[in-house]
Amino acid sequence: MKKLLIVALLLQAVVSLHGQEVYKYWVRFADKAGCSYDISHPSQFLSERALQRRTNQRIAVDSLDLPVSSVYLQALSDMGYSIQHRSRWLNGAVIYSATDSLGTGLDSLPFVREVHPFGRFSLTHPDDAVSPLPLDRPEPYTYEPFEASYYFYGYEQIRQLSGIRLHSEGYQGQGLVIGVCDGGFPGVDSIPCFDSLRNSGRLLATRDFVWLGDEVFNTNQHGTLVMSNIAAYLPGLYVGTAPMASYVLCRTENTSSESLLEEYNWTAAAEYLDSLGADIITTSLGYFYFDDTTTSHTLADLDGRTAPITQAAEIAVSRGILVVNAAGNDGNSSPQHLNTPADAPSVLTVGAATADGTVADFSSYGPTADSRIKPDVLAFGQGVSCINPQGYIVTASGTSMACPILAGMMACLWQRYPRLTPRQLCDSVRSWGSTSRLPDLHGGFGIPDFSRAFPHDTTAAIHTLNPEKEFPLFIASQGTLTIRFQEPPEPVEMILIDIQGRQCLRHPLNSQLEQQIDISSLPAGFYVAHIGAESFKVIIK
Image 1 (cartoon, one colour):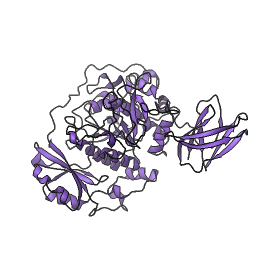
Image 2 (cartoon, one colour):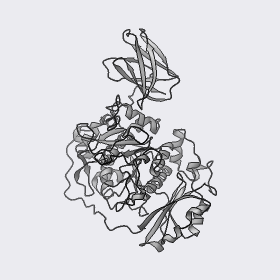
Image 3 (cartoon, one colour):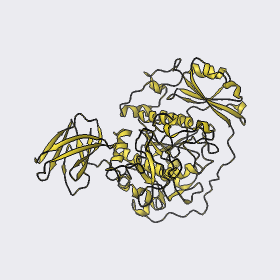
């Protein structure tokens, strides 16, 4: 399985170089002097939907959103370079030329801060297209809506996440735009399980950030398997976890090689998806080792801020995008390691679970270099039913499958609670994970229960602690947490733990039936409170 894909923004094909091998470089600029745009007029470089997402989450447009300097790009063009990608977030460009001699002296230019050569690449797409010709497909089975027969081959993955309740209540991803980054999507333009997606106009756009252009329906089947987990809709045969969402497909992975360049491809794609107004980016790939071993990552790089793709993923979340990423399949490797950008603090990192809910032995895990728990949560990832480019049901394993399954349920949850931010959504599913009371390094906070994450009763300020009701939810507002007991409690201490497992508050309780606790010093977020043998969840608004 290939590693994480890199996203490209604006693509420029040069006819004179077509079919040749070229030398590619990353050039980071010192500043954005000469940028022809201004943050006071963001509609000139961001779509209305992208700006609305920022407005909904109270995110200001800042200098990171500004395109790179056109003056600097023109200077590189005048020197003989072609521009493949521009990155406003990392303030640089991926450039290429027919000869490596041009690379000499790039780092001495006054507007260049750093230069990284990637090596030699072909501009010609390899002849490895997959013919998506569905033959003798099984007919859909008789089914009852939102029962096992409705999902059939897709049942186990949504059952394990307790996601059927959201679907049955009408939350199947409608109105959410999901960007999928992978190595190709053969068959998504033709096989029946994606008829609904195509016929309803919910396949919004495609973009190839590797070979440049819009053709993504060829090459590796990995992206097709991933798409079936999340977007397939054939009731009675297979239904994915977000079958009614809209999708943008991005090829960011060069399946014929492994290069640091792909992290910049992913960055460009993420910026493209941001500019379109995408809500979620799901990526079933990750990076650690490269063909050029001098550019490979080290364990120390997995600190949430070093790898280019990790930096870009963090910025994406800061723009209001939920980024969901596979943890990797190196649980049995030596050394065992995560892949980037799974190390990013704000990325929802997904590990793989078996059918019985245990952690799959191949699933990568942390901690990160700065001692954070990763993965965050688990989803079904071993022996998962998928649909291949010919339209047949096949079985696959990997965090690549767990990631889109989880991302689809996140779309449904966000549709149900549209005012939440990506970080609040992530806190919510961690809070309702099967091991949230005691998260561990291998499985993080466990398998989320999407039937309980943010129950409908989220407006009440006071809840009664009921010993017969496991893990009730308390909503704390205006700096006060109010607890009512059914009978006078024994004197005991309440301990409040944050989502990272840190003790934030210890407060003695008396024998009164109703007690108020000052929590004004604590930041908004999700917490777990322990009162003797009882536990409950607290949301501080």
